[in-house]
Image: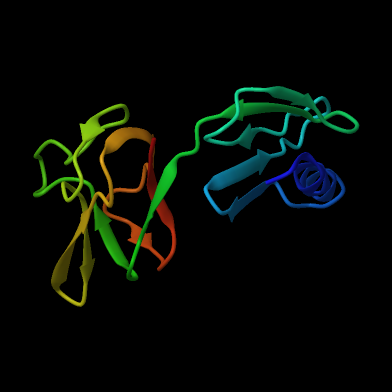
Length: 143
C-alpha cells in the first residue's frame, strides 16, 4: 500500500466519527485508531514497515506489526474455559499453536470449539466470559 492511500485513510478517520479502521491490501494491513481526546493518536500497523509518519492535524502515525483477528463464526455464549471454575484456554500473552482451542461458543446447546487459525502470541483478548457474542465479533488477536 502506498503512502498516498495511507494518508487518505488517515484523513478519512480524522474527519469522521470513525474511531477504528482496518484495511488490508495484498500482504499489508493498515490499522488506524482515533481517540476522542484532543491530541489523539492514529496508529498504523504494517508488517513491512518500521517507519514513523506524521499525519495531518493532531494525528501521529506509528508502524507496528499486524495482528491476525480471531472472530466469532456463530452467535452464542462465549466460554473462555473448558468448564466453570477451570483455567481459561488462553491468557493474554500466551503463545498458541495453529489449531489450539482458544474458546468455546455455545449455540443451541451445541459447543463449538474456536481454534487458533495460525501460530503466534495472544496480543488482544476479549473480556467476555459467559456472555453473548455476535457472528464476526473479534474475540482475540494473534500477533
